[in-house]
Length: 80
Image (cartoon, rainbow, N blue to C red; front, side, top):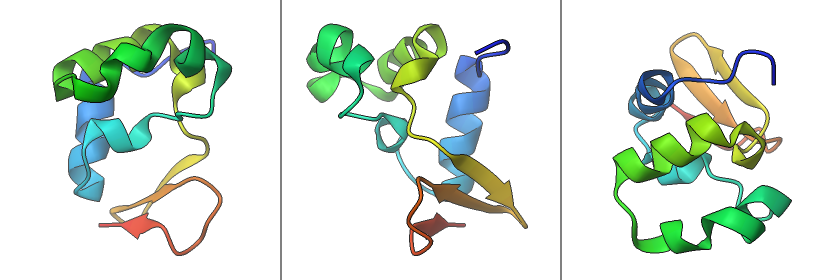
């Protein structure tokens, strides 16, 4: 990614969606499988830091529309 999300942006997205930062973590990604397994019991700040440094481990797409966060491709996964 040319401009990865910052820790603050990741926590803001999670707050917008009313979810934990952990919900933005793609546990099926190669990056997570290689580097992030220890995040299972980590706090939100640790997960946000990991995602800021390893943006390939973020679930995509993340779409913000009308103060609503859509995570992934399933249209029913909308958070506001």
